[in-house]
Length: 469
Image (cartoon, rainbow, N blue to C red; front, side, top):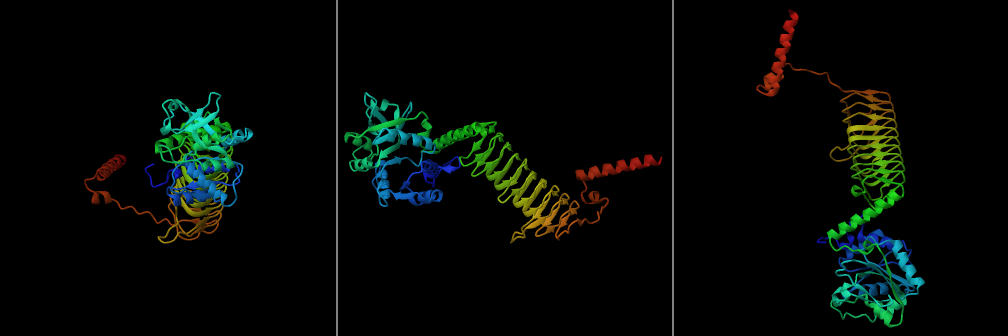
């Protein structure tokens, strides 16, 4: 990855690769779940436990190979209670693997009383993948790593995914026979299959059609490919559940997002984190929403927002910026070129255009005029203001916090509100306008403004003379 971030912590679809892997495994309701770590151990372990605190972290020692990783994982679990029954082995860099596929693997394994069942798929150009070797009758006899394969074996297109179901007892016994006598000098988990077979145990494979489920990512190109496939899967799922996605290719939805039926998502929209969208809402175009809860029949257009609540029937945008702590109540409006932060806008209230609202509570059915700013910061501390119900504020108002605007109050355009406004009062602080005649000609001689003013003066003089005639 050429990154300070460990590979399995790189993310797609709202989760890191290892979080996707753990989530799929956790859906099986396992008795215990272990993660074997080594490279950048502390970072990876902390990341895993932050996602799922019930995972047992096991450290791999200096003996290399997947066989050793499984061996130490089993030993780590055996310390609390001896593992019995079916053991599933999967990987932290295979993020598209479905829990449903793992359930199919378990069913195939247990119904046929296998000792080892490997998950496989077919790839036209298998490259470095291990090959599945079958007998004439179709039984799996061995898994051969590409570097150890013969020319004939390299022609096999059925590949080992590295994902297995094992009988715990057979796995434990077979691992003691696995050596590092191979081209890589590693303990291969693949050797367990042939060892189990030689000891008279049944081994089999479950082949799946979707190779992307078992694809890993070793660089950012592969990560992006997996991200595209995951997003295709997610958009298709939502569309089949009754969501209209006008252009799936430009719509990105995290795996942690929930969307009700009859929602419409317009092109260029990204829904991230724990965002949820209620029935009948229209989102987009060109909107990015992270951890935003959206009620029914809301409309959000060309908006960037995070950690906000938008209630039913509310409208946002276009070109709005919702910062954390924004709450827009039912049928409220946050309009064009409006930024909000730590702000609650009451039912039916409107902040229509060109305004900033930070640290303010606005009551119900109030209207804040265009180009208004809630001046919440004094250079040291933030202060909060309140606006009551049924208030009508003029355009270009400055609210120097902390101030309180009473119910039913009004203000004039251009007002700087530094003091509380009582209920029903009109707030104004407009000074008489003063015009200084001839100022431009005197102070800006030779400019285009002066020329325009001179021409206008001459025209006015001529008009006056004609009028006198």
